[in-house]
Length: 306
Length: 264
Image (cartoon, rainbow over all chains, first blue to last red; front, side, top):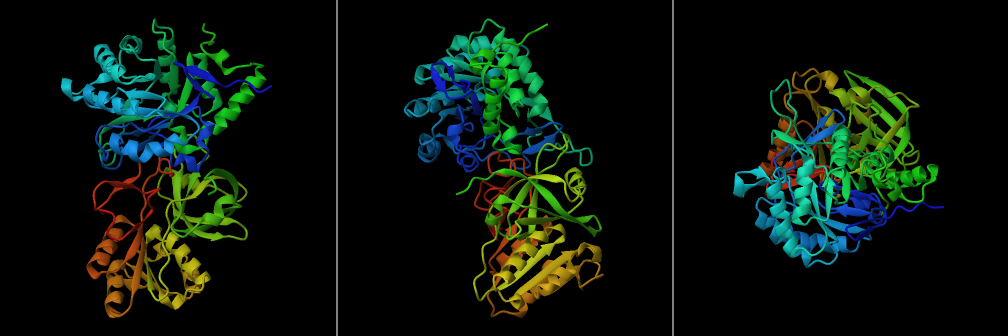
């Protein structure tokens, strides 16, 4: 018997719980040269901003122990060209399309999501709330419960399909942010975004990326991400969780499901093995068969804690 | 189009070329029929302390045996590990990847400008042009380095029958000075000929070649190097600034760019 890999998040059906993470698969075009995107439960695009952004000058990435540090600088084509040039390709893909949205003001999130609401093939939006808010002196949206709630509430008014809030781990209490997102009207959470980090060259005394600080991703952050998923899952917040952070194998994925994630996103692993999602999907079927389980959904939150 | 994929293959030969230079040949590779001069492969290193694959330019291919050769110099952690491969070892390779060199026009004189460890893609280019029937005497192969041990595989280049011009900064082999200086002299000496530059090497040499091409109105192409996390165009980590503004991905839009295209 083939185990059932399908899951439902906020009313949206996913053929499997394996998605690609924002910033790790562009707009899908290059990855389609590696495997058929129909293999994916969903694809999350690179962050889309109101204007086109060229991104930071190189170097933008640095290798770290078990991962990487990056500050790409939200390089993207902007909402106008995204709709014109990228949506036609994405529309043809037999997978759920989730558009990640970033902004420096609440009004930018609202404007972009209103445009996306008119694109029926955009199944969900994922709000990148790890950006500095220029209206309040550069404080990141996602670090303050009130800013998180306000942003999502305003987007809720213009975007009629499900909203995912992507939470940053660089906060004192991530469950407080999760609850604020729920209050604001989010339908699901992506836990977590990258962890703030820094790498310096001991010979030149220069940071290894031009933005000085960046986001740490890859296997190095997996335990941090798992603890965050566990914390949110056990908080009063009832939203479904999409786990993300250092997932490279089916075992990694299972850990996230056990801690409470309904689905996962694969990010940095794509840079080492571009067909990771295909391998994990095959591995997941095998895992469930080995455990004599009928559905992947039966793993969610089943961690046996001490 | 067939899908790009990683595949595990086997190291067939490892040659110590001295002075920290090594050649590794491995195969058979399924994707080899796609491989063109200027392409690179992304090699996974079997050690947990090196996270990313390493991009290595292709030095030669054998389409019949489906073998591919890389030549590199031990420089950092990645190349140190790469030099430890022995024949019979499994090796995980993604590629060939990237945009390669375009073909010269029939009557054009081809000028290869190789600098140090930028030499492998030009060896591949010259070899495949000669194999395709291009007159080797129409190829000028400049190869610059600090001193004699930096100019490797000299016999192999000579065997192609191309006009070989080694250049060293200390004059220990070939002409003395900078390779681009001697390239400019050759172009000036043949004002009526159509020439095309193909260059790969250190940043300073590429910058001079780019400028030389612009100043003398000579078309050509530069193969760039950059640390690449993904190698397939998705991470946007390996970008270079363009003269028209914005950035291009070395791994996906390059590594080969036209002279004048990149802000070096």
